[in-house]
Structure formats: C-alpha cells, structure tokens
Image (cartoon, rainbow, N blue to C red):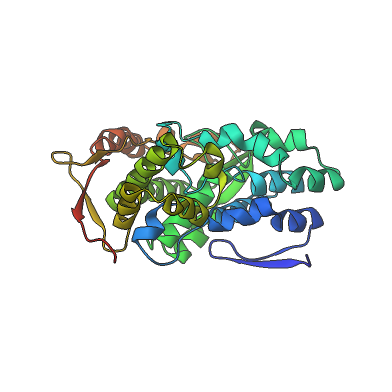
Length: 333
C-alpha cells in the first residue's frame, strides 16, 4: 500500500507513511472491522451513517500518533479491537457479561490466528509486547482517567450523534497533553467540558432506549439461536451482516419474525414502571487529570467541589435508565 492520507472526522487530514501500519491496515483482521458497528444493532433501526470498529481503531491510532506515541504503541492502538465480535457488545449481553470484555478474552488468540504476527515481526516488533495492553499507557488507562481508546469513542460517537460541534472537539484536542506517560489536560475548562460530554454519551448514546431495546432484542435472538445450535461461538467473530445471514438461513420462524422487528419503524422508551426489558447498564464516569503550571497533576474533582458533587449524583441518576419497552410494533414487509 502506498502512503495513505487519512481524512478523519475527528482529527482531520493525517498522512500515514510507516510500512508496518500500512500493511496492517490491509489485513483481513482489520478490514473485518469495517463491517462491525460500534453501536451494535442501532444501524438496523436508525438508518444513516454509523461508526464502525475500523474507524474507531484507526482513530485511536491517530490520537496516539498525535500525542507523540511510538510506532509500536500506534500498532497496539490499531489492533486493539480486532477481536471484537459482530455487533460489538451485543455478544456480552448474550453471555450476561457485565464487564463487557468478552472480546478481550479472545484477543491474543484472534491476533495470533491472523496475518498480524507475520507483519509485525517482519518489521522487527515483538508480538508479545504488543499484546501486553497494560504496557501502553496512552492507549489504555482505568477509569476515571483519560486514554486514547476512551477519548476516541467518546468524541467519535458524540460527533456521529450530532451532540458536539467540530469546533468544540478541536478546542478540546488542543488542550490535550502528556505528562508522566499519561494523557492529561492543560486547563480546567477542557476537563469540565469533557466530563459533560462523557455524561451525554452515557445518557444519550449508551442508555438511549432505542439502542438498548434493539441490542437487547438482538442479544436474545442470538442467545436462542446459540442454544439451539443454529449458531456456534465461532460465528460471533463474523461481521454484522454475515451473522445476520446465518440467523436468517437457519430458517427458524420465531427468529425470522423477531429479526423483522429490527426495522426503521421501531420506537422505544425508557419506563421504569412499565418495561419489557431491563438492561443492566455499566456505569462509568471520567475525571480527567489537569496539568498545573508547575507540573503537578490533579483530577478535576480535586480542583472543583461542584464537579465532585455532580459526579457523585450521576450514578444515582443512571440507575433509572435501562428499563425499556417498544412503543411501535410495525414490522417491515
């Protein structure tokens, strides 16, 4: 592959010249992610542009690059999601995996079975080092801190949903820095902006009733097909449309009828008093580190009592989400 100029909706135009990155981008393992939607089944019920795992993976690589990360860490960023299952976290619901890390348990195996090892080793990189995700401090950090993975999916999903403006994103990115190997912000205003943005992601994207209903219904369909031998666990590592095709070819009338509900006419609401599905939600909040003029690091909540108070209230508010029911039963013909 010749040099590649990426025109990314979050980071703008960036040229990729490193042969190892270019070769990895063309592998089947990375290309499969083009057809895996980050929001799971939402694309079936809300037509339009939806973020793919490929776009996110490239985005995380670009952010690590922007922050001065080594080529080795850029590789780790690019491949970090290659084990994601079809429909992203829907498979976590199939197995009632509240940690939402089913794909991570298969990461090393999926990478080793792909063309990735031969490519990285040909360019002198250690696969063992690349698979050790705890080594890459820009790529991954536990909550409530910032990391490239968390930053990219937040900014990308909010942008895709029309919940933030490009100018806001550009201003926020300008405030990003690296201190002691960790992603930090250089001003408090950027920190409070991101806390609010992440809260919108949590409530308006992750806990959106239509998204929750569509993903829970699909999870139940897949679970039923898996129990009855229509699907195998291996099928979970197909892409979205391939998995749907397997379900339809199974010929089970109940499954076909349930899949037909997942159409653009579907509507859903959150109603704790009258619900069809209770979807347990993974609560999370961010509290970015702020870099002082003297090089010290403190979380936003340590610098602002109002931020600390608002973060404390979020979990309680979130507990009333995830009680969803359908309000339109139209089925596509």
